Image (cartoon, rainbow, N blue to C red):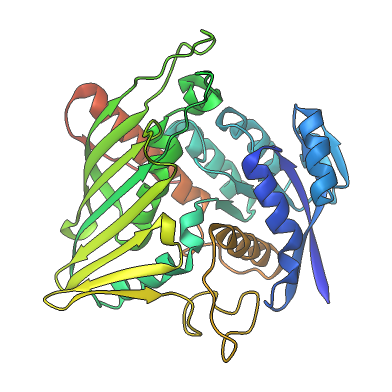
Amino acid sequence: MMTEIGIGMLGAGFIGQMHSLTFGSVGASKQEPRLSGKLLTLADTNLALAEEVQKRYGWERISADWHAAVDSPAVEIFINSGPNDAHAEPSIAAAALGKHLFSEKPLARTADEAFSIWRAAEASGVRHMCAYIHRFIPALQLARRMIAGGEIGRIRHFRSNFLIDMQHPDRSLSWRYSTSRAGGGATGDLGSHHIDQARFLVGEVRRVHAMLKTWSRDAAARITDVNDDWFVAGAELDNDVTAAFEASRVSEGHPLTGRIEVDGTLGTLRWEMSRVSELHLTERRKGQRTISVVAPEHPYSDFWLPVGIQGSFAIGWRDGFFHQARHMLAAVALGEAVGPIGATFEDGYRVAEIVDAIRRSAEKGSGEEVKFRTVVA
């Protein structure tokens, strides 16, 4: 028997289409009990795009007004896939109506705004999840297990690169390049993914020292507050761990490069976006071996199909979105916890606080302590 959970969503763009696909069809997985999203209302100011997405994925209705995706009593989960400047108001309004919340990352443009969203979600008592998708990649969940189990010893260092070419051929700039609409550029849009992974795999970020750079200019002269194209930051984490983060959206030779490494006293773990289902382990004085994360004992190995005599097959990036959707649906329908595997809005807020500290550090040219606030019940 299938349990359907009513979904309302803001945003019909790339990531909204991914959530339409995954929340709407994850019920076909092998996971029990069977859970699926019921795609009720999709809101986007671009009604032509919304209509296209409606036809492809089966949304019952569309609207140009986000209130339509929130107000219906049949909507149990509100998915916010809108631009960053449309995260706070709709999500806070949905929380006030008792809707469970699933928001794209970054949670907000600034730490102050992210804190207000987290506080509203906590006050309403709803489930809340911030879509840091790397947490649902099986290889990175396995890395977390191995690190926690001491397999690479005491952790000393985390390093990552997120390099991509997001430049439009006509040199126009999207909302992602505007500080007032997006907040940080490479910092908030790209770096936030790996900052969250450092927290997920190793520990909390406590102090940062950063540089950032902006080269982009809007050929149409519409966006005058262009945010950062590139940043690099050194960081101090809990337990005397250090970290190095780098992200760029103007790396012409990188269609999409993502690398994460964790060094311990006994070895190093490495993961790369181009080989999503592989984890590389280099042990001290033993050389490197590659773990294909598809065995029966690995995370999500039997999510879709039986694993065994017919083989174990590599997964793709989209699979992580299905894992994430099932996790959110289970939190609402079965009362399962969002964290520590999924990122809550507290995690989303904390990443925003780290991003703000990185931007302040770069502006001042000095180190910056990361200070976190708490929501008072």
